Amino acid sequence: MYVIMYHYVREIKRSIYPNIKGLELEYFKQQIEFLKQNDFKFVSLKQLIEEKCDSENSVLLTFDDGYIDHYANVFPILQQNGITGVFSMPGKIIREKKVLDVNKIHYVLANTNEIELRNKLFRMLDYYRGTEFRYPSNQELYNKLAIESRFDCKDVIFIKRILQVELPERLRNIITDELFKEYVSVDESDFVDGLYMNMEQIKEMSYHGMEFGIHGYDHYWMDNLAETKLIEDLESALDVFEGVIDPQNWCCCYPYGAYNDRVIQTAKQLGATSGLTTNVAICQIQKHGVYEIPRLDTNDFPPQSEYYLHTN
Ligand SMILES: [Zn+2]
Image 1 (cartoon, rainbow, N blue to C red):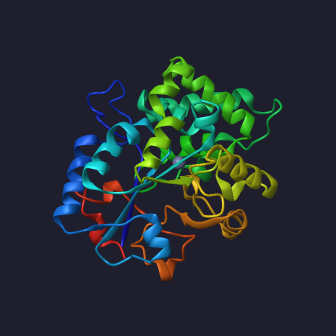
Image 2: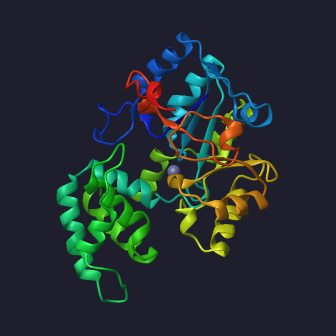
Image 3: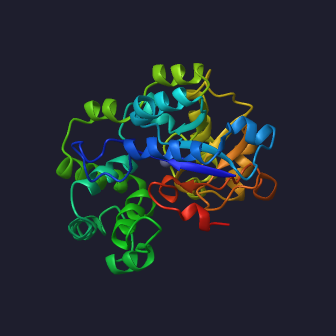
């Protein structure tokens, strides 16, 4: 079966951020039509985990990061078609109403070009190096991190990795904030309301049968966290979703797809019964196991591409 992953789903070209990387709403509608016309059977996470519904033509739709797009654009379309989706978002966006660094980086990237931003970042790294923060030279960092991915060129990956995980956390926050103010420059609290869904909307979706996953509290690379911090992050997330997510039976959607055996064991001890990764494969639940469910990206399916036909 196919598990498909979505992030932003909106009218992008006509929005005030036409360069944000995401799926045009029109393409989402076309993708649902494509799946219906090709006799795909939409299953829920519960059906996949408890009844092992993973026949070749089944599909599960998953939506990460809690964007308002999922409530305003996706939810009505799923409802019209009687489809269930899995929505996983960091606890922090609900409880603290802060824009996550990962999203600040998306909007900074949408408002500038990566070469300008990379050079700006080099200058900032030079400025902060040797103060209270210690880290390697720009060239060493660049050689280590700038490795292109399926969807991003190497400079974009360098910018993302250095600000998501590589630098000391406090410095990551400082630099990301500075860049957000310079390139996006909007009131952060207004921005939050236009970016994420809220608890009221989550409860409405849950009432109508949508499923919710735990995506950590702070959207950390979980494989990189000390054990106590990992437990704290997962417990805080569970606390936010009390009443929506069953603390004894939940799905861990690993932020950035970053996990290892220790992360799985810890999540399991805290009540997780499944896990969503970003490993690229067709899902065979017996083979992959419930804690390492692979996913394809929305861009792997029509109308974007036919890459899904060439995975194994
Ligand atoms: Zn995420």
